[in-house]
Amino acid sequence: MSRPKESRQKVDVSRPAAPLQFNPFAQLDGLDALKNLAPAPEPEVKKAPPASEAGKAPKAIKPAIPKNSRGRLILRRETKDRGGKIVVVVYGFAELPGANAVMIGDLARELKGKLGCGGSFDRQEIVLQGDRCAEVCALLETLGFRVDGVKA
Image 1: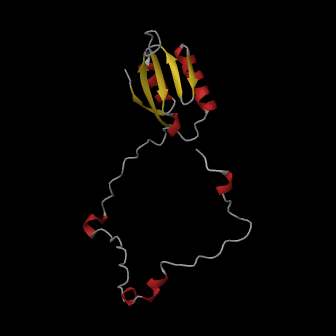
Image 2 (image 1 turned 30 degrees about the vertical axis):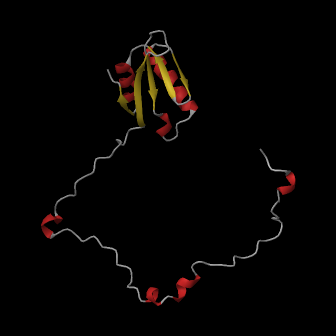
Image 3 (image 1 turned 120 degrees about the vertical axis):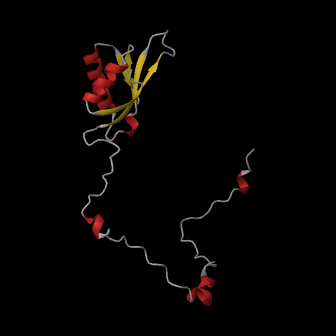
């Protein structure tokens, strides 16, 4: 149910609005308790290691992604709605920097050519025909991707 048109009043925005009449924080300026507060604590400065540890190299943190990696892709094996035929699905392109439909299409074409199989790509995944997870994984790793999911 809608209201009758007569009861709808439009707000006039053509002229500037009146300033606010009430400031809830105005009374805080006059409080003496806030004027006598201690200053904020100083942030702690990290001290240099003792002389006995100065010669040792700090422990290196292992990077999450190797330097030569183009990103992480995930493999999945599916048979659903395919008449019992097995396909390998490559997904995870949404997290890759610079991934677009052209790059995904070129990668799908390259995988299909090297594997000698059919397949397609749509949205953010590549579908390759056949149960060839190990071969797909090896090819993607040679192309510089880190591969997770089904590998055998």
